Length: 330
Image (cartoon, rainbow, N blue to C red; front, side, top):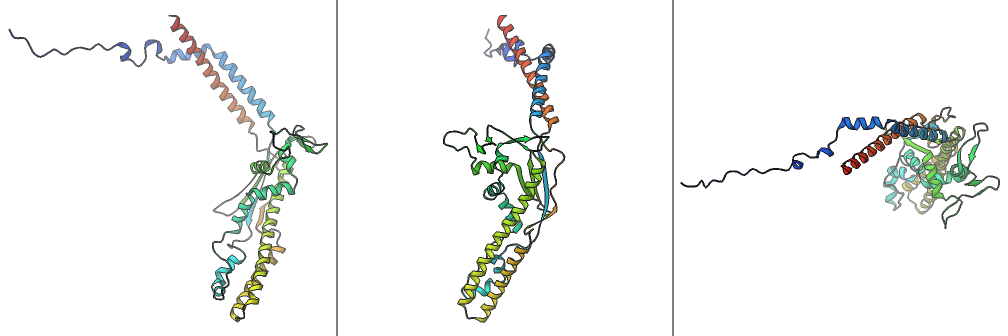
């Protein structure tokens, strides 16, 4: 009798721990977790209460910050200024006589002013001109009774009028321009709405009166800076054009130079008589009556949420540790 050459299929026994992703001891029972949290509810409540208490302390410790805002509108919409604007009209004729009066890309004067207002040079100059160093670097709040700034005696000695702050070796106690710029950059913002063209200047500070005053100063200084800048440019252009006028005997070119000098003289006159040279104030800054920061209720809510989360995490860690100890003991 012949034997069957076909072998019967073998049956492989798979260990139980391969059949299930977790063994019985490692399975997570949501009901068990819930019971574990209920058992440790007082621990969770304690951590939650601690988080709320800490957040309340932080919220009360943080000083009020007030915001003063002014809305501006560019006083002129023309692009470019000085010779760069006039070159579009007279550059061709002037080039016939070998005279280069500039040209190239021109920029909206308001946009240039905004970039200057955001520059380190302008902001540091603003701080120094108005003596804001102590207010920026050493103040930590306002005395509610007197309205005066609270000065940290560990940073600045008011009686001796000198800086006493502790700094790393090799650095001076007097704040550097870079430090002043970083602080003032957080307090003063200037932005422009691309659609309407309106410009907004905002100042955040502990004192609402100083915030309003700084806003006015900042706008006035920016207008004055741009005015001085254009006056210097116009005077330089007039001097240059007069030199070129003396060098040419062509009547047409002399006419061109006279017109250019006339336009530059107009620019110079307008800059002298107009105090709001680049920006006109639509909505002036006022002394704020309500604080903008800190959001104390939000701080307390976040503190409670974080406290509750940490409480749950600690309870779960304790539950996992106890479960592991029991499995090891078994």
